[in-house]
Length: 464
Image (tube, rainbow, N blue to C red; front, side, top):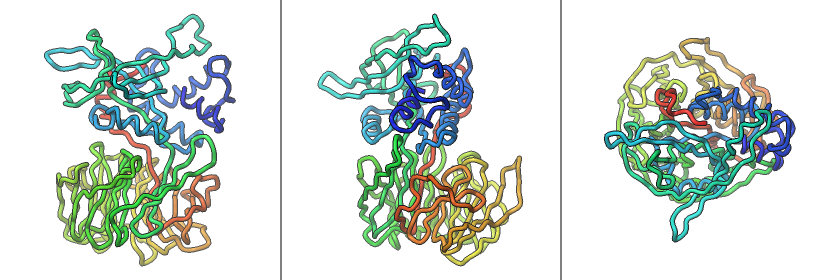
């Protein structure tokens, strides 16, 4: 709620339900805190689990129309909890909240015994070491109707390698206490919503919405793909994978630093998508799907008997969806590329390049073709199956490419401009990217979490 008040008091009052004011003097603060806690399923004694924290924050940002995504990285992804990366993210506009876990060393392993969420307001690296500054609500229970004033707390951070609840990782140790040990074991980042497109040649154009105004920042990032870009995929950790036109070169571009490096060369590669808690990059090579890790190393491969036309990852069901027009099928694969069944491919009007995406709200699969103003939808969720249907987008023109990146919302590149539609095909006004120039490829960021659902259900992984 600290960050929601910050956003509300700096130009976007809709970030809270009740009018923004001084959160430590306003009588409405308790109601705002209650509303957010309902979204996050906060337990009055145990606090909030990391998974519910992420899901609730993501839902709140959408409900309050804050143009932002929620990124949750846990100990399983320790590279993202290291100091330099957190500092880079904060400098790029991310609003950080850490979980400081309390650990006890048992037989050489660190075991979590609960934690505390803290708002990050400063990160510094000096000759004396690395320091973090946080706002921590004072422990004042005298008046349950009034929000406690925050106290500023500074901690010295030391990278420490060890085994943490079964996971080998390097985490930032807070201070020097051994009873308990304290480690930063997950971080939640509210990051401005952004879109990536290919306006010219091998360069990327990145649009970033403002959290506090209607402004949109645009910047160009060069890549070594001088012959052009055949496909794009946004990696949750603020990177983009770009596929070179005709070369099979797959390049990773860091959206914060602007640096790029070649991940792999895969002759015949045609489509890309990211997915899974391990952030695998899935590459379609005619009749093969290849999974690459962050270093570009092949970790698994699956062969198909027909060419692949499109692919997308269903995060809710943790599965890769592969479309093959000649087979007339939508194939389901696990993140390890084990086949898990198929569905009939619905009719998709048009003859152009096929695009496939998964709605993160209801799990519906949506397909379209370049040059066609129609979107085919198939609901394949096992508890709510539905018949395929086709919806026309009332765009007044052709739609070269389509991506669904918000719940029920379609971001479209139409006649060289970005337009936004709801699931009924009607234009959505107020999207920060409406009317901005777009190339033939368009990707819009989504919220992401790598949290282990089973681990996060345990009481010791709740934060207060």
